[in-house]
Length: 134
Image 1 (cartoon, helix red, strand yellow):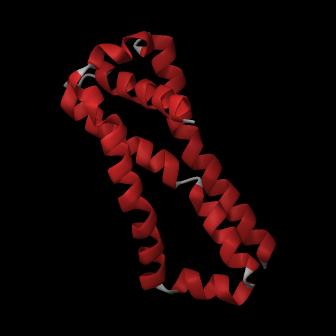
Image 2 (cartoon, rainbow, N blue to C red):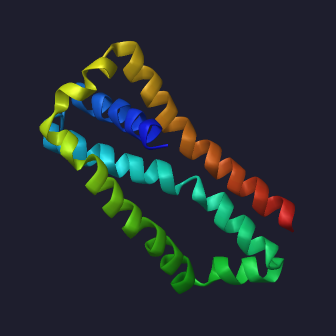
């Protein structure tokens, strides 16, 4: 699992290094960590909604309308995940050459498509779960 996450991170890092702006190793690395956090958190949304729905549709509606609970769950997931990702991948800012195999234009295009489609697919899954619960 760690190897898979490292490959995904290096693809995102390489994409960031290859862009025309914010492409210094430090900034590209921190941007890649933020994208990794998003790519890890967004797929969790359908899971959280599904678990809330299993406890009952009224509980799901209560969860959705309670800003405090929604923010609490989000922070309980995002903060530790961001800390872990920073600790695991922050060192790549010092070694941008590790991302060199993923700097080819075609590889960067594949990375961009994956970064774009993952959140869209997860939002669609969340809507599907929410629609089927009613």
